[in-house]
Image 1 (cartoon, rainbow, N blue to C red):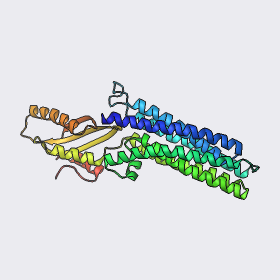
Image 2: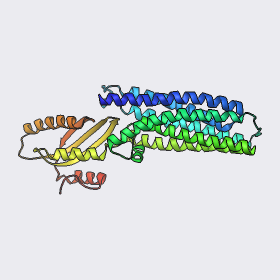
Image 3: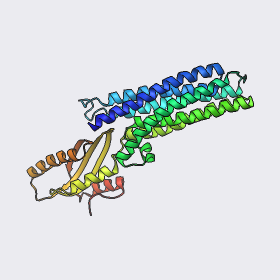
Image 4: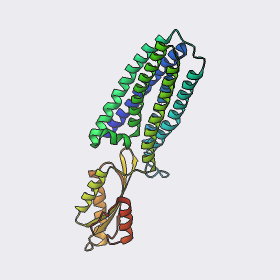
Length: 328
């Protein structure tokens, strides 16, 4: 099944990122302690934060697949958004704080030179190789997502369908940038003999982590609050409803993402007056089944009769969308 396949690939992406970060994080820590490089210690904190984030993302994937029950009738899909938000804010902010602290300490500390700065270069190179492999996996899955949803990369990063893939891609991209910053800081430290460059690199890595936090948190915020479904899906649903012989007009459509592959649909429809109540009951059952068949991502469907002449309802729809869905 395609959905199971996508879930498996998403888990593989997170696991690959986790193993890469655990390995390079340990190497960075050892190199940072031996050489005394604040930039490498900041990068070790960066990798530790990434590793913790990936563990939380695995928890998010597992918990979000729980079936709906009495206490959560729309399922647990939003668990993925919650854990992704927690990972983005709690972990990255703490990593950024450590990096800035390490940078300030390095700049205003004793600034003793180290004979072992050279050890940082092979560690950074190996880290770049491992992070590059993880980034390639995440970028490949992101490319499939953008092609499947027919959206640009920038649009998907702002409003992702699956924040776990989004998180891993941004983490790995930030990791590659962080490695470059650390390499420049260590190199300038060695060339000039001033640890100020090393400290400045640590602070820059901290700022990078804060930037990633802001992007991830904003995407998760929209999903947690209750983001609507893809506008193209909404337009397709409206067109389908208006094609039904029992439907005179679609008055209102409300949607909300309740998970990575689940959409809640509530629609108010003005039915043709000549049909009886029994006819409309059968029509609603048929339309419900056809909607789910045509749009598999629809988790729950609610169809409510409404008059397009209801001025209060039309005003609410206009305030929300900028125009009334039903014709005048």
